Length: 255
Picture (cartoon, helix red, strand yellow):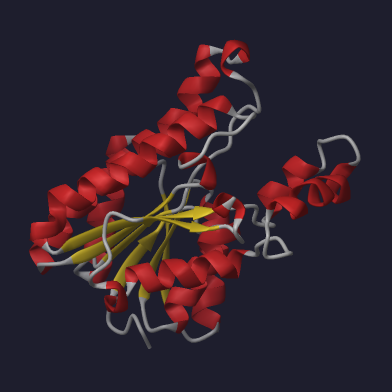
């Protein structure tokens, strides 16, 4: 029970890595605010957690809208009285284009969620954590936040911003007892990833065959592989870890 009596907000918890993270947190004794833009998937995740014996409430939030974030924080405090952990998992991939191909609206769409959303959630969580005297924020970055790629220019730029936001916030809030870290996943076989894979020539298997050799460990990740690292960073076991953008990538960035 590594998160016993703690309260966590997990965004993007209606599916994929966010859902698995929320479920794992609940198994470790955490009370989880399951948050997603899609209210129905959030409710389903919370229902499954409750059925398994955990404690979870579902909340609809648009993280790119500060008023929506403010309402979320007030609702979580009304329901759980405090906030110990924030997991900024929600994000979008956006268009798979190079910079000269990207339209302004597509660039702005990615930054609104991946960067501004992380900013708004952090902005409104920090005062609540300061009241506790400590807290842990775990952002979802990407390997493309710490290395370049020949694809998805808006996404790579946005995750680079998240990586440096993580370092900066760790410095700013360390003396308040608030740790800020991120996970940087490699290829993880979520439904979102597989849907993207089905769009490439050759489909899902062709995508897997292309990505597999880039991961020296010999296999591609699953959501639980990321969730276990988020659990560590969120827990008091990582009390001396802050400002880290941690690759969880099967060795992708070791080359």
